[in-house]
Image (cartoon, rainbow, N blue to C red; front, side, top):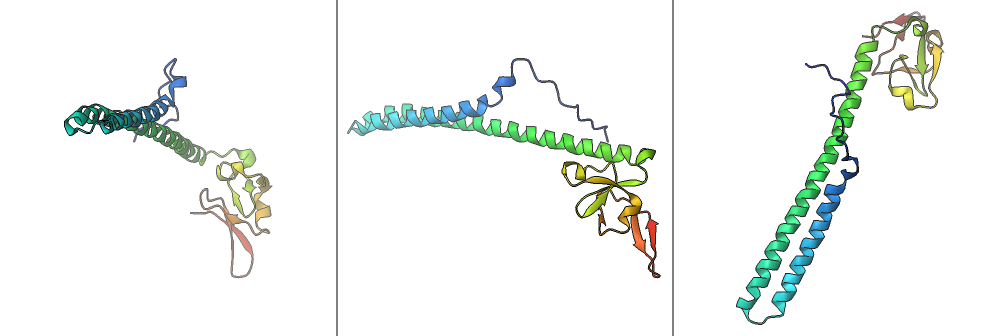
Length: 176
């Protein structure tokens, strides 16, 4: 498997930053113009009682209007696919970064944080776990303080856990 890096995307082309949503907006405008052309074709056909005189209006207004609507719909569809692709690439970059953090720092935790865990409201985590980063109640506590609390070990980063023996004593166990 190749080395995933969050810097895999190409740099933006100069002068194209302001054109991001233009495809979708132009597509909506073309759809409206197409419906307007179809309306004028129908209106022109409705002004003649003789059926062969209506065909030029139906062909020019109906077919051209339908073509413009299809073209506008295609532009909207392509713009939505571009936006979805950008969101997917951003999510994949976040996942790749999280995997690099998880894999790159699991073996080399700094010795100054070796005896500490990050405690949240109901669970505790390793210092390099990304889950409690956005939580305001997360704080560092010594690992020994976890034994007397009701905190559960994180299921993602798997910090050291305390297990109760049959005689009631607490013993630190490495999680698997």
